[in-house]
Length: 262
Ligand SMILES: Cc1cc2nc3c(=O)[nH]c(=O)nc-3n(C[C@H](O)[C@H](O)[C@H](O)COP(=O)(O)OP(=O)(O)OC[C@H]3O[C@@H](n4cnc5c(N)ncnc54)[C@H](O)[C@@H]3O)c2cc1C
Image (cartoon, rainbow, N blue to C red; front, side, top):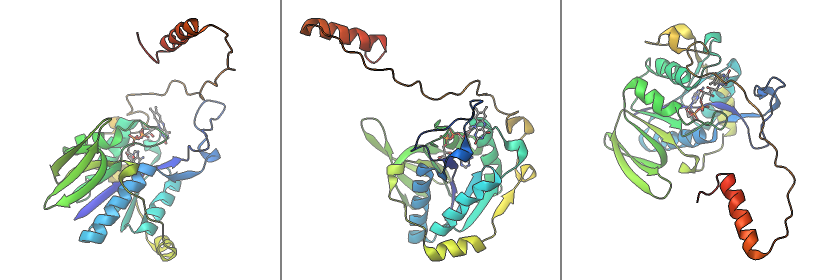
C-alpha cells in the first residue's frame, strides 16, 4: 500500500500571532512547526506502515526552509520526502495550493492520501477536499479514527453532535483531526538517518497537468485585502441594576453582539 501525507509547515500560533507593520504575517518572528492535524495524519500513516508495511511519502509545498518539516517526518518514520518549491508558487490561496499539490501527486502512485483537516495558520480546511476534486477521488473529512479493510478505508467521521462510520474504496483522500491519535516522537537514530536522506525537490516544471493560470498569486481567485490582529477587548463595564432590569440589559447586549437571537 502506498500512502501520501500532505504536511504543511506553519507558524506556531500558541503564543499568539505576530504581524509585520504592513499587516502580513511575521513568519520569521514565530517558531515553525509541523501542522498538528498533519502530524496526526502522518502518525496514522506510520501505524498503517507498521501494520501492513505501507510505503509512506510526505509532501509539502512551501519555501526551501519547509524541508525541515519533511526531515521531521522522516525522523518519525516516513520513507520519502518531496518538497515542492518555486517562486511562481508564492502567494497561493487554497485553490492554487491544491492545484499545485494535486499536480505533484499526479506523478506518484497512491492508494491513500492523508491531509490534515485544517492548517492552524490559514485555517480554511479547504485544501484536502480540493485536492480530491482535482484528482477525482472520493474524500472523507474529519477522521477521528481510521482502519483498512481489504481495498477500503473505514473512517469514523466527526460531526458536531455525532459521528458517522463511513466506508470508502481506495484510492481516496482522508482529512485527519488531531484527535485521531497521539503522534510518536522522532527517534535519535531517525534524526541522524533523516539528514542523510536525499529529499526530492520539485519545481513548476515537475507539476503534471496544471495550467499556469492556476498557480501562485496570479492563479489565486482570492486575494487578502487586509490582515490585522484581533481587536482587543475593552475594559469591563460595571452596571448596577435590579434583577429584572439586569436580565433585560444582558439580553440586549447578547442580542446586539449576535451571540443570541430572540
Ligand atoms: C492572496 C493570498 C496570498 C497568500 N499568500 C501566502 C504566502 O505568501 N505564503 C503562505 O504561506 N501562505 C499564503 N497564503 C495562505 C495560503 O493560501 C494558505 O496557507 C494555503 O492556501 C493553505 O490553506 P490553509 O492554510 O487554510 O490550509 P487548510 O486547507 O486548512 O489545510 C488543510 C490541509 O491541507 C494540507 N496543506 C495545506 N497547505 C499545504 C502545503 N502548502 N503543503 C502541504 N500540505 C498542505 C495540510 O495537510 C493541511 O492540514 C495566502 C493566501 C491568500 C488568499
